[in-house]
Image 1: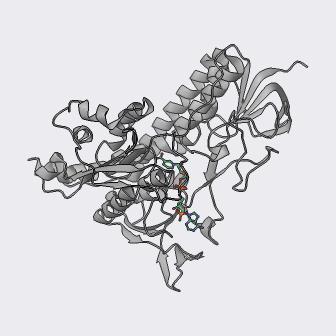
Image 2: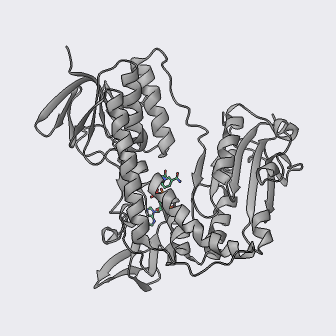
Image 3: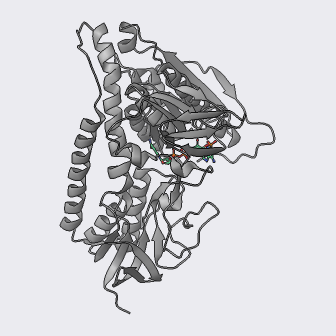
Length: 458
Ligand code: NDP
């Protein structure tokens, strides 16, 4: 049976665009369907505008620091409307580039909402498209049913479109979005209360990062409320009332719902797992032969570079001569709090639970730039080393430039670097990163409980 296209991609976000362009490069005839703007969450509502807001927030610290470096700084004020206008212009520029890249690769852009009508058939409005392969790259959206009444709260999408910031805000949740926006809003003059249900933010991260995150947020003026996620939220006039577990009710003019994101699966007709994500096998095939899925809609590692890597690998497999899969066992990631944090490899607990005897190397210091102006911000670094074969299992860091530093060290870990390689590396001085090659003695060695099976991390 002949089809109009070789590939129809649903969703023109980072993953879908990367897969479509790579497939077209291999000579495939490709259509990409998008119901909103081209660019997806990362470019339009996530990573990019978030980081632009982070840069704005960093200036709050920079003005204060500049005085310590001899500058006279006049009155400063942040104007969200001006940031907003510049951000909208920048995301429009990036959307234009994405559209050009698709057109340049010969990919047909079909604007509208897609429904999968059969293994090779996609319906968009009154148009029926057919293809040998269908790729689902529809991403995820904020959950709006995690807590009764949470639908009254703003999401990160709404926050990034505000023309003015509230004076006071509550943030519900303790994950990536909650802590990043708490750190930013506090520096932009908002009084922030962070309500989360665990004892520390960032469940699943290394304990060092979680503790440092809480301390840094507190130092920035964020009120932390661990174990105090609301049971219910109600609207009352212009306020939102958060009913806490201890019967207390607190009112805020503005509340951010940062309780997670859920895959966009409406109209797909595919098998979903218990969390509502499209199930895929190791080769990214869904329950329907010829229908594939990548990125956040599969809810595994919800990070833009993962979706891009999966999209390219799938296109190479289906249309190129280099079939391959993506190894998700050691994906580096960053949390853009202030200071930022970044990790590659397991947390200390995870490494020990996986059966490793772990040598833990740690260092903590006040960075030179901060110490000079009497700042109290601290940089913390941690290396986890397998005591049996000296392999560096993980790198964790909180401090200025952590994401940039950890990205480079991730290459070393991918290459199988040992602690001896780190020790032989000559430092670049004076930098913070040099501390990673200057750690001499472990602060502790942690063995797994005797009963732990030797299911070692690869
Ligand atoms: P996360 O999954 O990171 O965090 C969700 C938070 O909501 C957790 O703290 C969770 O608590 C809490 N939560 C969930 N349900 C409830 C509930 N019913 N009551 C109270 N609290 C609840 O989601 P985010 O929305 O922050 O981010 C979504 C994804 O986007 C991330 O997983 C990440 O993959 C990606 N992202 C990546 C960024 C980056 O790379 N820098 C930045 C932003 C997002 P608990 O921990 O107790 O379960």
